[in-house]
Image (cartoon, rainbow, N blue to C red; front, side, top):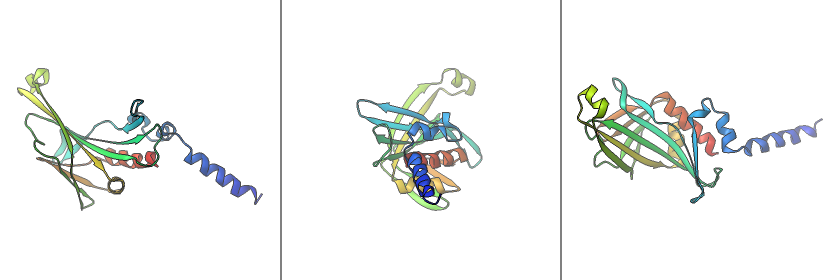
Length: 187
């Protein structure tokens, strides 16, 4: 019996490390929240979450959301996993114009993000514009790559505040859970 115990422990640990990304996602609390895209031409996979609305100082920020993800070579994460965070905003005015930086406070510890990649689109008001009286919308998106240690720090934080352009928000709990889960998926 004593000889079988180490063998049993070894077999259990090998099977845990040999799980596919899909098997790991299936074990998460909300597995359908995570999407996996594979680009066969680049041999590259991306696992990402939906955009989650965040909180401003006074309630929800209706047009501001955060999406997090990982990108890696092949169909299973190994070395070289890239963590990323995307900030998306819809407003009647530019909020992140000429900005490529963000400041995060993770449990009060300052983290400066630089080199953000920005995309934007301006659209007419449409049906929503008629309801709100707006003549149009500005959709902005800013993506930052995160070093693994920054992703881990954010995932272990209880409170994360963000300032990007004219916007200041506090991450909702779902965003922090998504970050923790991505750390799990990448290892």
